Length: 63
Image (cartoon, rainbow, N blue to C red; front, side):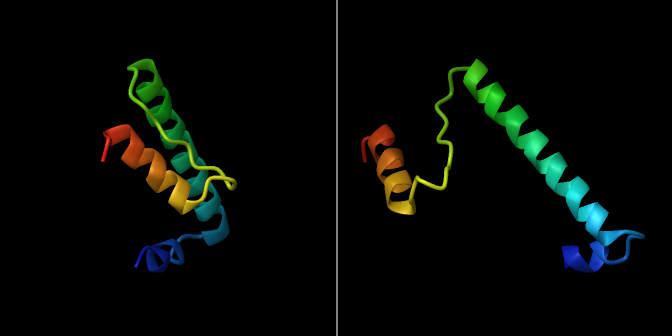
């Protein structure tokens, strides 16, 4: 559905590029707000697999 709307723009590739930049900026702002308020974050990296993420979340919540 969103791609249908993007394809209606004058430059879909540029629209996608701008949207991605906006999402990265917003994500960084949320992360910084969490860090500044001592809220634990889990940053996903290529080296951090799904099982390891799940383990870290379970460990954090003691479940």
